[in-house]
Amino acid sequence: MSILYRSTRSSAEPVTASKAILTGLSPDGGLFVPTEIPTFTSSLEEMKTMSYRDLAYDIMSRWLTDFTEEELKACIAGAYDEKFDTPAIAPLVKKDGAYYLELYHGATIAFKDMALSILPHLMVTAARKNGVHDEIVILTATSGDTGKAAMAGFADVPGTRIIVFYPHGGVSNIQYLQMATQRGANTHVVAIRGNFDDAQTAVKKIFNDREMAAELADKGIRFSSANSINIGRLVPQIVYYVYAYCQMAAAGEIKTGEEINITVPTGNFGNILAAYYAGQMGLPIHKLICASNENKVLFDFFQTGEYDRNRPFILTSSPSMDILISSNLERLIYRACGDDSERCAAFMESLGRTGKYDITDDMREKVSDFYGGFASEEENFAGIRDLYGKTGYIIDTHTGIGNAVYRRYAAETGDTTPTVIASTASPYKFAVSVVGAIAPDEVEGKTDFELIDLLSRLGGTAEPAAITDIRTAPIRHRTVVDPADMADEVRRILGV
Ligand SMILES: *Cc1c(COP(=O)(O)O)cnc(C)c1O
Image (cartoon, rainbow, N blue to C red; front, side, top):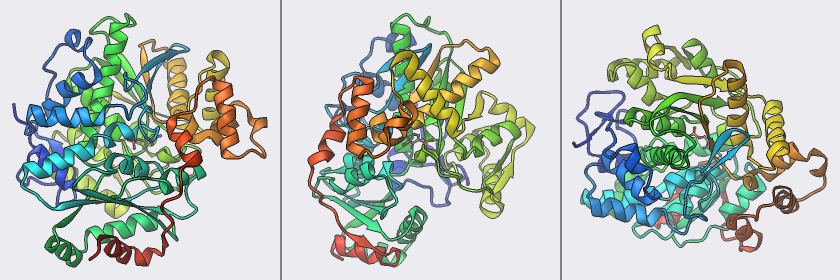
């Protein structure tokens, strides 16, 4: 069966998976969605015995049907290798009755590595398949995590270059060091005197600059995007939910075929949407628990059926979830509309114009597999401290939101379904907040690296290589520009 991708906002002719990956966003502003959601080829019994790579092929080949077996297997082999610090790639650990799916064993110790380590391979393959010989230049504005994960993925990938913009003084010290020390002759990091929105707005402007695009085309260069609306980031994320299930079944924690819950600390709605797609493919899922921090626009949406971004933006200790427009929710809305792009476009038009929309009761019924919850800063910290006190296991502040929401859900509903919690970042990446949760008296007067040492002692774990690297790696990127000069900086870098 061949799967094509169409826009959530128009009935334009569907395109192949490779074209959708290459293009990123549909020209009408919609997101690419499959014309049909594929089902598993292998049984859960069979998948239980597969390695991560074999399972990745089994799942991804169902979605990316215009990639040959050889192409897709090469992409998978190039991505899920020694860049991960464990052969399990995504290990599952049981603590205090819940299953933590550790998605942070890749190069930049956050879950975005799971998709961004394979996206460059998919993109280069897609270019080749479509007869595109241009150099692909990835432009990314980042608030911290995405830019580094994208650079780690694209570093030294032939035929590509990546330029990352981040707010000068607007990221954590660890995030700054991670970016400023990035290796790879094709990576470029630029700080801007402005905030993340300034960076994002200027990047969008460069993307839409037709004159520049034409100039670049003459030189055999084209821009592309690595952000989470690319279907090439979503599909690889389906794999680890199936893998988690298989690990539970293989260990006898559940019977094969038994339902599980999946809890996901959510921002842009990409990670949890992948879990939803896993369920649609045939993974036995009872509830998808969507966990928000104090920016609880999704909680309100699942509670009331109204999505309303008109509210203050709150800065929390789970910054990668500080978001008021969850772009990937559009793909769920499309499903809930009965795959009706006209209706979906009307909701998105309303979101653009008024900042909100209201779904029908019929649509609410269609998303009733989701349970929305949120946790305050205090609940998050208390949950991290409690789990550490009971088990000695340390989770980061994003996973902490998932943890707190799940614990409250279980207490309130009495639901005893075995539950996986997506563990989206290493605690080492957010050491200041995490030590603040488990040993608040120890934080004051300590540097980031002293807190990391303390975390290592408290948790009895060795610090990840990603941290050791930045202790001594030379600073390679020092450019700082004004937002108004970003386009010129891109020209300078590309030599046009
Ligand atoms: C990006 C990110 C999230 C949010 O994931 P979405 O797919 O945007 O919902 C959660 N935790 C961490 C650590 C992240 O980097």
